Amino acid sequence: MLLTVGTGEVHQKPALVVVGNVEAAQLFGTHLALGIAERFAQHADKKKVRDLLDRFTLYIIPRPSPDAAEKCFATPRRRPVGNARKTDDDRDHQFGEDPPEDLNGDGAITLMRVADETGPLRSHPDDPRVMFARNRTKGESGQWRTYVEGIDNDKDGKFNEDAGDGVAFNRNFTFRYRYFSAGAGPHQVSEIETRAIADFLFERTNVAAVFAFTPDDNLRHTWTTGKNPRNIPVHIDADDLRYVSALAQNYRYVHLDRNFPKAAAGSGSFSEWVYYHYGRWSLASPGWWIPQTDAPAAEADATADHNGNGNEPSKTPSYENRGADDINALNFLAAHDIDGFVNWTPIEHPDFPGQRVEVGGFLPLVRDNPPAAQLEELAEHHYHFLVDVLGKMPQLAIQEAEVAALGGGVFRVEATAINRGFLPTSSVIGYRSKLAQRVQIALDLPEGAALIRGPQRRRLPRLAGSGGTATHSWLFRADSDLPAGVRVRAWTPVVGEDEVELQLEEAATE
Image 1 (cartoon, rainbow, N blue to C red):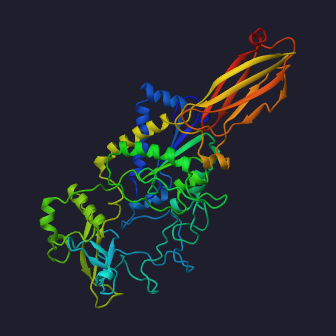
Image 2 (cartoon, rainbow, N blue to C red):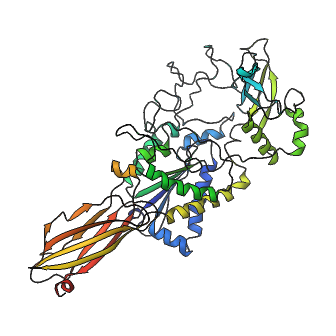
């Protein structure tokens, strides 16, 4: 689905694309994308918003991979990875032969933990529901190994390694594509939805920037610059980073929570493809994350009732913050009265006869999506952020244009184009790759006039933000019967256009 928000000739104006839940499990991204479109429409009668909609178009793609998102509603519930394509995730020429199973019959796929003193995990002394990685150098023995809930259907010694989970939208693009990895697809841009969105963006030459709800964040944790291999950029350009960092600072101001989680590492990600291989400004944020939450007092006294084995929690301090994210998530769920954790429950497992096996853990999607009561506030925050982004887009104008009569019917025209917006007319990557059309300036001559020097139309260099300029001049000859005037025009689909009319008769009489 595509929503277009704007006025007049919407495809002839610079555009901002907003993409909803790039990760299938983050369903709230769809709601936020629709909420942003709704707010622009609702506030279109306000001068600031109306002026922005007169200058820019918004393309809203609420749900880029519908089949993947639809899996969130399947039974048993589990966190979806990819679309409806049946895949061979373990590359054994069988498709989906070892999926997870709901062993405790609660309608959800969680985890199972198997008691093993050589295992990599231990129960947390502050909350035995939580496990953390043991530290061998501190003499810590293991207690558990964990697996996705299920059995070894194909008896290859691996558990649920081939669920036929499909191709993930956010792993199927060309930048840093990981061949042969689960969810990546048979090749780059192999899926209908990734191809459709890539084609749409390339066809819309007026797209200036893309904002996506995705874990591949660059607004809380901006991408890092560095030395690039020759002709193969893999780090954001230092100049681009300065501008993105300025936008990111405003995002942090609008989104007041400072408990920013670590950004996901992209492989075949959409937002990185936008910047590196599509040549546009790319802004990315998950849109929501579990904030830092203190443990409710009642829960602190009742931890032993929920830990699944009845052991009293230790008063030992935090174990160097190991397991802190899980404990914080439990505190958040308790504070919002969300039943999002399955207490560890012993089961008999056919693949582990005589061993202690427990099923439990966080329910699917509860850590991916905010409480419903927070959705409107989140949509409002992101709407205000994107209003600010549009206000900082490049703004092309003809600053000065002069015509001078040199005698003998020869005239010189000199014009200066200026960028009055905050952002440059394109990213450095977009300019070098020529994926974003460069600013052009042209002299439109009347009939009977002939150009003497220079091309009638030429490309200008990238114009820096906040006053970057470029000047070009032309010489032409006009007949004795002077035409009324000439026109100078500067334009690019990703920024817009401006033009001025110059009167030759006035120049000839000076």
